Length: 309
Image 1 (spheres, one colour):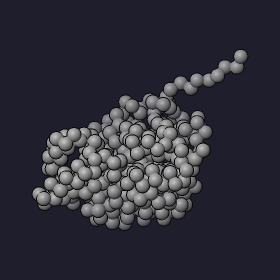
Image 2 (tube, rainbow, N blue to C red):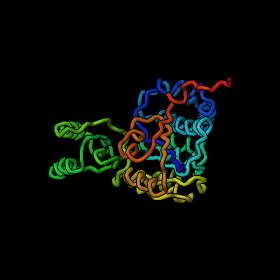
Image 3 (spheres, rainbow, N blue to C red):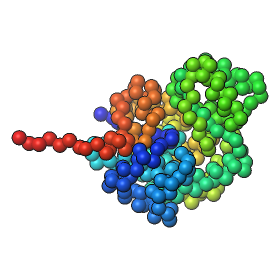
Image 4 (cartoon, helix red, strand yellow):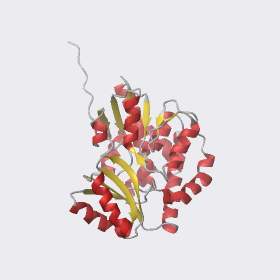
């Protein structure tokens, strides 16, 4: 049976939901220690004390948990994926698990990228956020975006998640208006991401990351093919994975394209490895695949063993 691993994009995640897993699971403990060594500080303590859903510490901890959960699935479920995908932030875990990028390097890259993004959006493009929302068919979305066009407002669609599920990047000053407008038409706003990503307007950020950060990273050809979240192409080379991560800064996520690639390759089962409230539950995934959520709660359940008579 052909299967795939999906490393989820990052959303709000309570420390309490993952803390026990990070301290008890053997893979999580090993990766947590390796991450702390790579960073030169106690990641668990910094994450525990963090007051932001998207802080440097939360981002690295999310990476640790995603990779640890995939290792747990290998160990306990005999998971051997044929393809890997990682929408948005999940691309970092996909690069690690595929063998394209060393874990310690990815930890340092994640922390440094977080700092660069904070500096960039504070100094160069302040007041920009990405809002996610559902229950908004494409025809209704076009009407809402046309109103922004008429008002001369800038925006970009940052994620095409499903037929009625989107993420739009825009100025923070218009976020309340968009929330009200969506609700008036039956839409459901979910959460706001800050810092934002996946917009062509962030070209200068991509250039800075390429020059200051990616030049020193050592990518290798992945041992497991990686499906790019921007267009569904299958990346089998070091340069392909590198480009996928860099292009994610300026190119929207198109999840239906990933789904279509899985289908063309005969994928029947998708394992979503990481703290997830979206990618393993969205209709585009569950309509088309047998979907298993591999999250800290599942990994902490007692394993039932059959006793021989």
